[in-house]
Each structure stands twice: as C-alpha cells, then as structure tokens.
Image 1 (cartoon, rainbow, N blue to C red):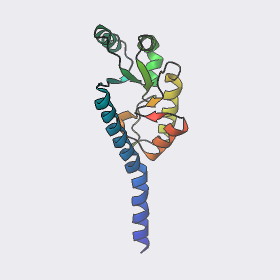
Image 2: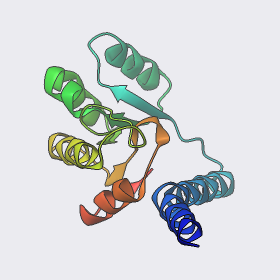
Image 3: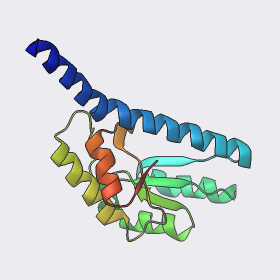
Image 4: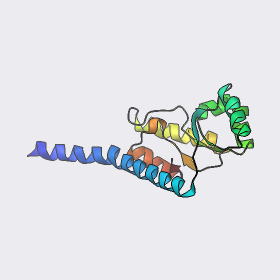
Length: 156
C-alpha cells in the first residue's frame, strides 16, 4: 500500500515538473501558428548568438531582403560579442534572452538553471526589445516556468 502511494506521488510530481510546462509550450506553439496564419506572416528566429562571423552575414541577408527577425541571445555571447548584439538591436530586430550558458533544464540542477536564466536576462535586458524567453533545447520544467513568470517574462 505504501509503495503504491509513493509511486502515485512520484508520478504526480513528474507530471507537474515536466508534463505541465511541456503542454503549455505546445499550446503556445499552436497559438503562434494560428496567429501567423491569420496575419499571413512568417516568424524568423535565430538562437545562440550573437557571433563574430555569422551574425553580421545574417544581418546583411536580412537587410537586403528588408526582413526583420527575432534573436534569442545567450548572455555569455552578448558579453563576448557586444558590438554584434548592439548592431542587431540598431537594425531593428527583436532581441530576447536564451539564458546565459544554454543549460538543459531537464538535465541540470534547478538552482543552476535558475541562475542561468537570471544571468541571461540581466545581460540581454539592456538591449532587449522583447520580454520573451526561449528555453535552451526547448526544455522547460516547473522550476523554469516559475522562474520566467517570477521575472515577468514569457516563454517563446
């Protein structure tokens, strides 16, 4: 009897920890797709930058086609390539956080992930034009979800 209660309790925790945030993510993706279809737009997003070589090349391609995009930047790369990050902002593209070091929320300690999210927001927010956050690898847990809500940001 105690074993069954333990298994049921652990199952409930796992559902809350992994499944509920994942279902919310799926709902947000479906909502964005509906909005894009209705508005007849395509959303371009780029993750893990900025970089010294690809970011300027990408900005040239986007500018030559008069297209804007969303850049989900890593805090440690914003620190290393601040000129490229500022150039992205100056050219009118949306900038948002993708964390600081790109930690996988399902595989790392929740406290480390929390610190990573906070550090990413702190670095990206001064140049950010968006209150969005894209979790690394698309993986969120209840702790990741709560952390983004606590800091008044949305998942993307």
